[in-house]
Image (cartoon, rainbow, N blue to C red; front, side, top):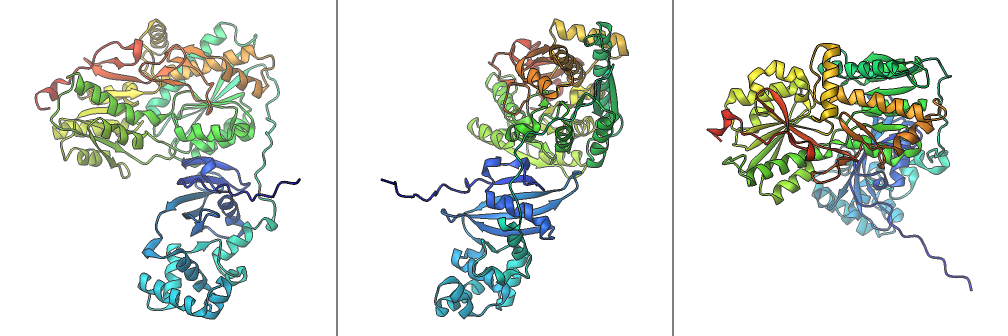
Amino acid sequence: MTPPQVTDRRPVWSGAAFTVQVRADGRLGLSDRGRHEDVPEPLRRLAVALGRAGLEQCRFHWRAPFSGRFCRVSLLARTDLGFDHVELSGDPVDGLPAGLSPRELEVLTMLLSGPSNAEISADLGITARTAATHVTHLMQKLKAPTRTAAATHALDTGLLCVPLPGSPQRYAGLSVGRLVECADPAAGPQAPARGTRTPQVPRPRRELVVGAALPLTGTGSDDGREMVNGLRLAIEEINAAGGVRGRRVTARVHDVEVTRAASIRTAFDSLLVDGVDVLTSGYLAGQEIGHELAAAAGVPYLHAATSGAMERMVRDDPARFGRIFQVCASDTEYAPRFVSLLTSLRERGRWRHSADRLAIVVRDWHGVDFGIDRAREVAERQGWSLDVVPVVGSGWARATAAAVREPAAAVMIGSFFVDDTVQAVATLRDLGATALPYAIYAPSVPAFRHRLGSLAEGVVWATTTGTYSDRTGRAFARRYTERFGIVPGRSHAGLAYDRTWRIVRAWDVCGDITDADGVAAHLRAEPYRGVNGTYNFDTPGQVALGVGDHGDPSLAQPQLIYQIQDGRQMIIRGGPFRTAEFRAPAHLTASA
């Protein structure tokens, strides 16, 4: 007996919000919100169709089949990151604008083509009287004096229903009609290619070349010098030890302005034209540009973007991005650890402050997520109120001042850059604020203390990858100082050094140095202990495994929290690598 046919009624949409890049071939790229699986397939097809329809943007309300739930959708063509894509955003709608009912939204959408009540009733299968009632009600709700005014409002605000109600021919002259028509599977193949690309690797050479896109000038150049020195020291030591199977290693460094997409593309294109064997970089605002170019070239790529968004990008498309590795844990623990540290200090009586308020000053940085949403949850559980103050442009001083207009126990300065953090700390001191300054990574760079002088005393800061103060870390610092005449910072100098040695180890073990997939497989398979801790890439997004305060630091890297005490960098949180206890800054203890 043949079983009865059952219609597949699995939900097309999870109901979660999302913002994702959709490439011209239908592949999903960087996800700023949500997961790839949250993106409904019909909306992916509509995003791909945007260019074929000759549109730059489109907004509407999409109705999911079966569930009938509405999703407010925005499609925007983008080229500013150096490659063409569509930014697709969707937000769940609990109640339609102006209190419209789903049927009224359908009728409003039909008004775009100027139909009569009889035509509406015929298309929707309702009576002409019911159609007239719907028109009257929606005009009242929208405060529109005429049907034309209501239709104009719908176009201006994206108050349109997709799938389009009624006959598709009614919308042929409208942008949304062209979009839906172009998204029809009959218009051409839409499915993204799923095959794994065959890497295009350079022919074997005498020298093995490490390509590095680093900020030698412009934004982050203080950090860039640390990265270059760490890279150079590693290569000199590697070649002194015989290189890789008798082959010398050399570096090809290209300057990059980390905040400009065009500069990022130029740097990577130039390195790839030179035929490098591996790509490396620090952190980039348009980090996905590096991912895309490295994936297309098939060259292994190790970066230090500290980005949860980049982690998801690799995790969601391992066939394309399987040769890309993030050499530090992602940024999503920064804000939660900030809250947890302040709670610990408060409970142990190490930081007494009358305020139960914390503040985070942060600029919108593409692809960066400090874990602020989870920090809010942690703060609420632990008895804090948490305010987030956005930075507009370069106004770090202004935003920091706004953060302490009300008393705050501490302020987290959400920037990786020395300039921004110096502005914020100096503002707190100028205002006589009693909040404890808590920075992200930037104080690791020696220029931070050089520029602030005594004002840097007491600053607390965190990093997902810091150079340990153990025997290995001290020996590295000594060799670095002897070679360059300056003391290394506590993060990227060691990170660049470790990254180079990690690459060389993979080359040395692999039978075929030009086998990019083999090199990537070794990077995934074997943890490596460097001066910044253990690099373990055996994670879904191929990021260096992080560890909590009580995890095993021999297999991963704990987030290190430092404090500047008497002009020295002391680790106050970091498991067995702690070198000091937190010390309340003298200039704050009297007034806190």
